Image 1 (cartoon, rainbow, N blue to C red):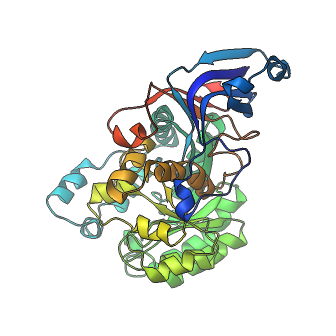
Image 2: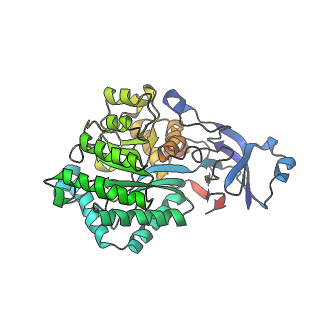
Length: 417
């Protein structure tokens, strides 16, 4: 079935050719076509443009039956890409949230066996089927808010058996969901209690056992490490990344959430696809990122939920860097995968213009997902992942109305969901 969406008030992020990302001042550039049409065939975008360019000849070249949708008064956006999530988990952690309200820090909760270690225990006790059903519900909710591509990390296993269990659940999600899904092996999310006095022994387990087994089953696209104060050192991180690269896994790094840890520089050194969090980012980190192929990725929901300082997004853009925004959907520090809210947080918390926030959640985060050639913009030949909004006057409503769902209909791979 082909789709013809016509009378679109504004077709947003409409690119004649695919771009890798937008950086610096270019993040304020957001291509928009007024009074537009969008034509898809199969799972791809076939054509788009102003309504006056929609001709019978163009429609005659479509080999499938065409379903027409009138989008008068509505806008069409490419689906969001969410390049950082932890949605395979068992149970919520609202009791820890109350501890945070009472004044305990993230590190203090972790030292008491809470945080990631709490989720690891719950995941150990859950079956694959239970984990799949819960993650599927989260994926469905994310799609309803406009997300079409997502990276999902392991990291709540913290043992070979349970890390593999998580990654097999992610593989099942890939097979069933119309979303574009990438799997990220994050065995180095925290140090298990049994290795508390000898964390290098756990690093050895990841290197010598986990990574080879993950690769043998082709369970992951990327390897990730929480390189930060209280978690894994730069030296430990480098050892694990080198082994991951040896087995074909490109790095993506949790870095500089707690301190200037050196994680950003390690990520750049090993050509990480992205470095994520970045609350503590100074001039040395910015200099390291400039000229690299690594996407700086900010996670507003985590900073908001934990009451942390905000990453210096404006300074980074002024220096010429690109910025991606992702949700960090997880049970401990951001129990939300609503990328519309991420756009609003980008504007409210980081003073990003709406154009910048939209670029950060579409084309730039498509790059951070490793899918900028297929997702992130309305471009001929890309996947037909897009959504039609409810009636809106301007694109700025996306940043302004942070509490409501602006999506009316959403489409993945050219199909209405």
